[in-house]
Image (tube, rainbow, N blue to C red; front, side):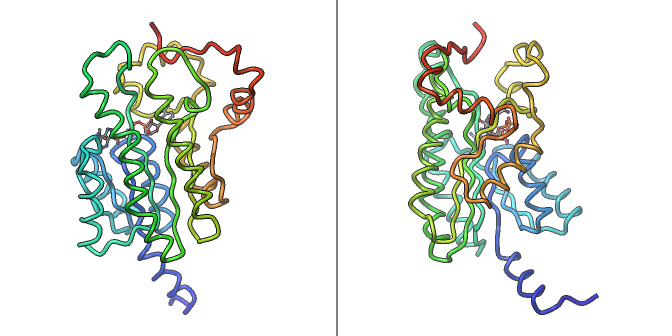
Length: 271
Ligand SMILES: NC(=O)c1ccc[n+]([C@@H]2O[C@H](COP(=O)([O-])OP(=O)(O)OC[C@H]3O[C@@H](n4cnc5c(N)ncnc54)[C@H](OP(=O)(O)O)[C@@H]3O)[C@@H](O)[C@H]2O)c1
């Protein structure tokens, strides 16, 4: 059956709306790629493991016929966001969805004594997120269309003991997203911080936290597809902060309360 003129217009618009996803080689990023390809978006996948990105790109192309571009890049390097933007610009890829998702558990601020490792962590978790927003949001505003999801965490919502890096870095991502949300409101661009709780991905294995994960109650854990679906619906609904999962949506007001917050003594990591 032939497309109606309205469908042709809408297909042409969708064709231009690239979704750029950082940290797309596994976990939440790969799931974002899956769900956004299913919605008809062409994709730009970014991470360090090029083989994983290429395999995902070919699967998604076969499954959905989506155009999928791959950029192998390390976002802990300060010049990476500029290089990504330059590649998009010279290739004529218009980014209308930006998913700042790449992230790791990172070093312990007090116990891990190599400052260059700490700096690379902040570059990845905070500066690269800010610079990607700086590079891509103004042109979204000019076009009057855009969606930005910055992946934060429930860890951003409550101070915990130990680590002193991950929660504060994610709290910055929440604060940044809230201000961006207010700054571009009413201009066709929605910005959300997505705060997942514990989610089944490669995150804990990469961080060497599988013992901790295996000892935890199963009901604290969510599947990546639930978190990503909450994120996409939340940004479409224009929410500045999206806490994912019923359990964590219920806990969040308790974490935010000045009354309960004084008494919470949550450990960031096992000793
Ligand atoms: N899983 C959870 O329980 C949980 C909870 C709350 C928030 N989060 C957040 O969710 C986001 C996604 O994590 P995930 O759970 O999906 O973990 P994951 O499966 O380990 O995925 C992390 C992704 O980030 C990429 N990445 C890591 N360092 C990078 C670097 N220097 N440059 C470019 N890409 C890099 C990894 O790709 P390469 O290794 O190929 O570079 C990978 O694609 C992170 O921001 C994380 O903090 C996770």
